[in-house]
Length: 228
Image (cartoon, rainbow, N blue to C red; front, top):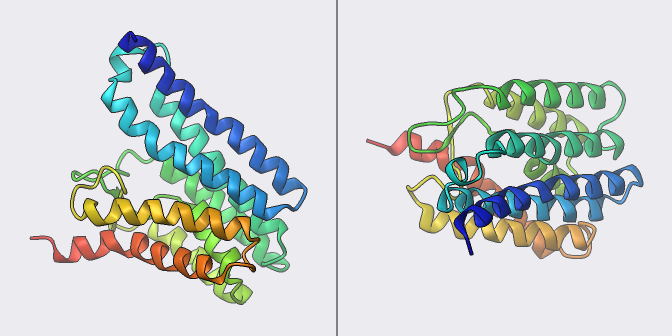
């Protein structure tokens, strides 16, 4: 197959994320949070594989008619930020003004972060929490903490978006990648399992989701503290 066709196919694969975003939004509007998160996990998986494929087939050179970076950012904002924020607000986990505060801070801070030219470090990690609200909010659904705990957690993550702290990219951060990538894949599995069980039928999935999320949240900071 011609490499230009393969490069174009990568763009088409990335664009499927928009379809999964719409399916997730339709589920969210109907309050089907388990189905919504299943679609978001599928979109997350696609987002994880399209980047390596884009670099392999050099889409900038072989399919330059589409801007893969822009396409990816549009879909990421929908699946990482907008839909999870909506779910958090409509789920009732945050009462009264706290829900409004959460969706405003999540959407506003994420819009600024996604347009920040300093978001990537030299080792291809992220500088600041990379706006992965889909990952954070699925943990909230799985653990259902007190609404003040949720509010504090959301506020902390929003602050971390703009602090000079590293957060690993599961594929592109080379240090500890032999550990990080399998854990990221395990996170996808646990997240899908937990969502499919509506976060109540499979406590083992919820525990695995929390454990893998904790590693992904703190691995980059630990690397930053211990690097020479």
